[in-house]
Image (cartoon, rainbow, N blue to C red):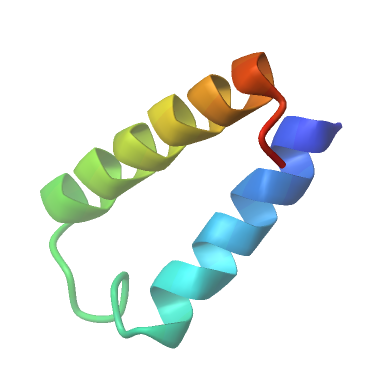
Length: 48
């Protein structure tokens, strides 16, 4: 559940700064993977 909330926040952040709008699917996939890795690290360290 924690990851789902972080994923939603990450998605909103990316949309807010213009990513995901007009970006190629490869770029979106790469960004998604980066956010998932960051979220995983944060969850492991309980930073958030």
